[in-house]
Every structure is written in structure tokens, then in C-alpha cells.
Image 1 (spheres, rainbow, N blue to C red):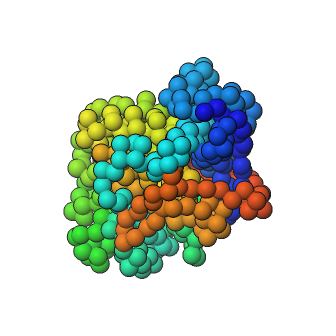
Image 2: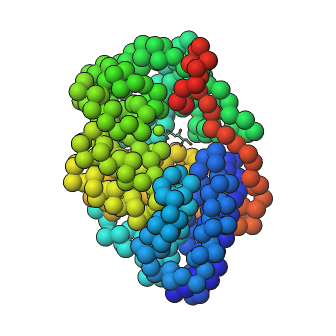
Image 3: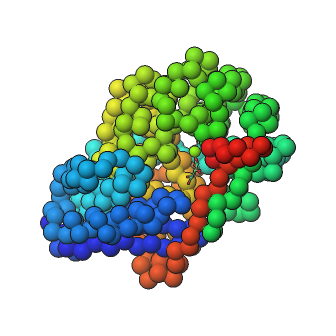
Length: 402
Ligand code: CS2
Ligand code: MG
């Protein structure tokens, strides 16, 4: 089953997406998401200029060999651009594999381990009252788990606050917008915020929060300890995780569950975190972590150490990624939760899909493959637009993690 054609489709139905399409001699088409928010064209070029010429003529059935060929064959290993490009090829080949067998991908991955996939939504607001209203809205939609992010008193901007009907979309045109940060303001605010959430919505609903890489380990230990009475489902990205051992300090101070990994791209980024049980959920997902093939290896390592999956699922990951992730989530044993930020209607029209949401859970559907397609003529109407993630500065102007 040779690959005879391949193309990279860059489109921007409300935000930029990069999609790889592989076509076999039998006419089977496979899709892979290659979107890297803020650096999309780097991955598009990596695929078009360097990988696609190597794929033409290869046997599409040799998924693992192709992964190793692209990983070891590049010599220069790891990194978000390389691993997003490899991920797109990997997912497209798994899509082709399942389509060639005329089964949904999860059946090829070992079949379903659960009936459906629990997801969490994103409640946010400029202040606590607005966020409480948003949180209640997600409960009315049937979500069993909701992430809560609110504006921080004294700061004119922060991470994760949606405006209008759009889900939070952290990419702005032409130049990175500047956010401002104060750890002191934040640490004063969040425990009170969570106290209000629990008082308003009771003990049952799963509540999540994303610190978005902004605390030192000891500050994260303090926040985790102060949140314990409100038993959050997880505290995400409490501190930058390049230094994996820094999570030992957080663990010494709190039992609040920790989730990390959306910015990781290989198993080596999380190996120590998993093997020392420094985290409870690994956030890596198919588009940035080398595809289904590599994410399965990460999940298998995590299973030994009782770490569960909690894959990233923001709107800057395309429906192609969401579809593939849901097949993975349905099948993997140590599944924890899946992030779900619904895409816009224009994005969904470009990427028709079989996955569904109902009462707080999702299912990938039983269409052959990953169950996601791309309407190329419609995609062509949405031209790429330069867009950047925000940057973040402390009140004195010092650069900080966004
Ligand atoms: C966030 C993301 O979903 C999350 O947990 O961390 O919104 C993240 O900021 C974006 O995916 C970055 O592109
Ligand atoms: Mg996050």
C-alpha cells in the first residue's frame, strides 16, 4: 500500500490550522493535525520541504518503521516542530490503517476500554461573579468537570479569560499581546475563588485550574495546600516543567493532584515526572507528542506508575487532533480526562467529523479511521493569517512565563 501523494493544507477558519493529507495507491486518504500555535508555518515547511519527499513510495502500513525513520533519520531529535510534523504523519498513517480495515481507529488500538470519554469544559470570566455564571452554564450543558479561570483583581489581563461567545483563543494577529502578572495578586485570589466555587456548586463537580507555568515550586506548594479543602480535580502546569525534579518540592507540601505536559513533545520530557510519581495526569496529546504511536508509549509508562492521561484539547488543536485523541482516550486503560474546547462553527464546517458530545462525555464515533475529514475547497477560502501567542510581564516589566 504505497503512499503516492501528500499535501499540507494551511487554513484559518477563525484561527490557523495545519493539516497533512496522505493518499495511498488504493485511494485511501489519511489526515494528521500539524498545528503548532504561533509557529504554524515552521511545521508546514518541515513537512512540505523535508518530510513529504521521503514519504512518497513508502508503504503506508509500516507505521512504527516510518516513525523511527523520521525520528532517528532527522539526526536532530525532539522539539515541538519536529514532533508535531512526525505526529501528523503518524496520525495520518493510523487513519489509513483503520480505513483500510473499514473500522474506527479505537478498534485497531485495542478496542474500547470504556463507553465514552469524560471531558472538561472551560468556565471563565473577568471576575468571580462572571466566572460563577460561566461555570453554571457548563453544568447546564451536562459537564461533570469544569476548569475555572477568572480575572485577577488588580491585573488588567491574565490567562484563560474568554470574551463574548468565543472559547478562549490565545492567538492574536501580527504581534504578541502583552499580559501583566503578579504572583502575589494571583495567590491572594485563587483560594478565595475556589472557596466561592465550592460554596456555590457543592462538593461533587470536578473543578480544575490551570496555573499556566507561572509559579515557583514553593509557591505552587503553597497554592496546592491552600486548595486542598476544595479538593480540585487537578492543578495544571503549577511551575515550568523543564526541571522535572522541581516537582519534588511541590509534592512535599500538597496532595492536590498535579497535571503537566501540554508543552512536552517526547517521553523524555516527562519520564522523571512519571517514574517518581511527581504528577497525577500527563497532559500530552497526539498533535505535539509524536502522534498516536508515541503517546501510547507515554501512556504505557504512565500506567506502571499510576499516572493517568489528561490530554490537551484547546481550540488551537484542530478537530483532526480531537478526533484522533478521542479514539486514543476511548481505548487507553489509564485514561483520566480529556480537555474539550468546542471549535467554532466555521472550523467545524471545514473539518466535518463523527465525534459527538453528550452530557459531559464524548465519543469518537464509529466511522472508519479517525472519523474526521477536511473540506479542501472551503479550507482554501480561509487564508493563513500571522498570529502570535501572548507574552507575559511582571508588573515591573520583567518577562515571565505566559
Ligand atoms: C491551555 C491552552 O488548554 C490549556 O490548558 O494551557 O489554552 C494553551 O494556552 C494553548 O493551547 C496555547 O496555544
Ligand atoms: Mg494548560
